[in-house]
Image 1 (cartoon, rainbow, N blue to C red):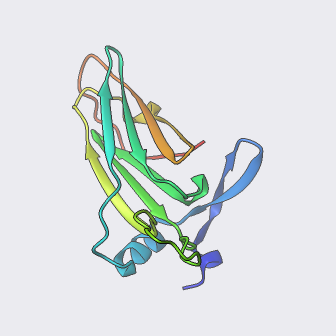
Image 2: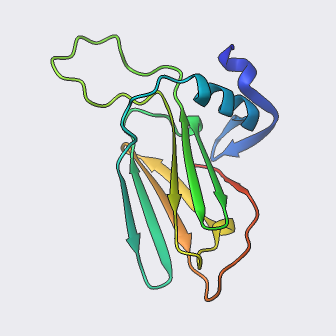
Length: 145
């Protein structure tokens, strides 16, 4: 499947640039055919009084290659990196994420509709507000800034 054909007709506007969204069905196909056996990236989960922060260490990716979904109290982080670094002659090479999907279960009192995501310096950070009562949030796609 050609990389340019993975994009949906609807698009997202990242700050200062136009980036087409990857269609969900094409993402699932790519993840299904991705090589297995790689270790998923490490995750830190920090809880504050009114919010939570999820940090996922993913060096070498681009923010437009992330697909982040939230549904009720579960966040799914997918990476569709079609150009992982492999051309250098490394003496030791331990991180090189191609495609992966990671599911993170959160407490039931989070508001997935207002998640803010940003990627900088190899770290994906999700900021998730809490609520007083469990919410029945629908499936929400989150743009990574």
